[in-house]
Amino acid sequence: MPNSKLSEVYFFHLEKAYKQFKKYKTDFFKKAGIDITSDQWILLKSISEKEGLNQRDLAKRVFKEPASITRILDILEKKKLVKRESVNNDRRTYELYTSSAGKALIKKVIPMAVDMRAKGVKGLTKKEVVKLNEMLIRIFDNFQ
Image (tube, rainbow, N blue to C red; front, top):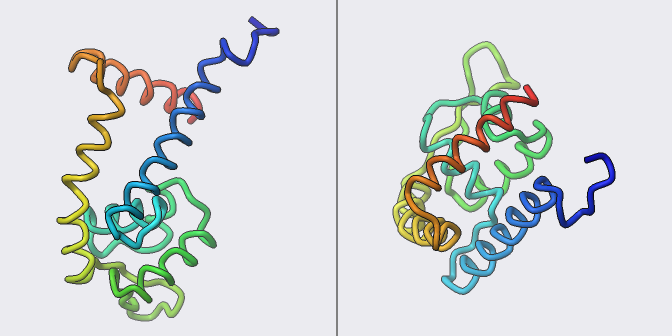
């Protein structure tokens, strides 16, 4: 439907849902006294899932521009949540590691993240959640 109303466009609803979730997460973290943004959390969690990852691979993994990654890593390093270790023979490349403070924060946030995700799919069956995930992956793959 080339002239669909915006209210009938699923991508509009997808974007709305994502923005609302991001706002909810930011407010939730703030109320819980957790000093981390959504973008910082995504990088921290990604690094913890693949310790030793370099900045370029991290950018690909989280679909962010390398310049954004550098800025966020600077903040995470300043907060002592991640460590950058230089790679031999390459002054521009660093391996990224979660610090003990970063690991402690992840351990604290995971139950909250699980609760937030559960809130987002409240009223959906497990089968519907699996199907939703499959459909989103397929939509993503269509744009590859």
